[in-house]
Image (cartoon, rainbow, N blue to C red; front, side, top):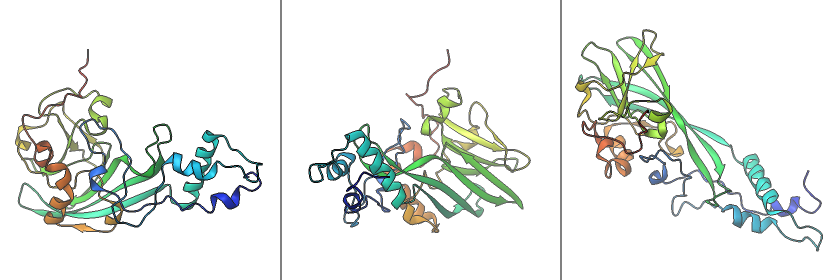
Length: 264
């Protein structure tokens, strides 16, 4: 329970809950480092940094209360999670034009978690978890894939089997899985017979070279929950990434990563 005289103080603080976030802060960087989001300008939401929130809690109530700053920050985080869902799932669909000129609909989902970076003082916000799921049906067979590497291309091989392609250093996937530092530094997920067990070769097949991105890269904003993306929607959603990084626009045959750790 809270100290006497404390409860009415914390209830007077505006809840640092935001549901609108900048696409540019999704955290999809070649370093694979996660970032907390910043609120959309003009969204009307309020967000406090840990220090700001703590300043509103650490006070002497009639000279009788003075909380330890670290304890106060922990209480703020606990209080925030009691007011807002500490994780939220975004689900969406996409119309995907395949390299076979067929169009299919895929279902995708991912999770955002509410985090406060108290140690570095960057504030609180919904941050993407580094995994997502994609589901689709092709030629009457169902496929489900979940990975920490966000797929950017769904393609059909010459022998008629689906492959998913992702930048290998996304979220540090390549280093975690001891993936060879080959160029182009993408990973090709190949489906098994049951449509759920996926494997990957040490290098992507050459037939994938130069195929354009046909999936939303990473997680779209929480406001996109329930949305169905067409090709134009997807291009707009990916624009903040593809405008600066050519290896997200298409499978770039020359792409290599400075962050890949070579096995000794």
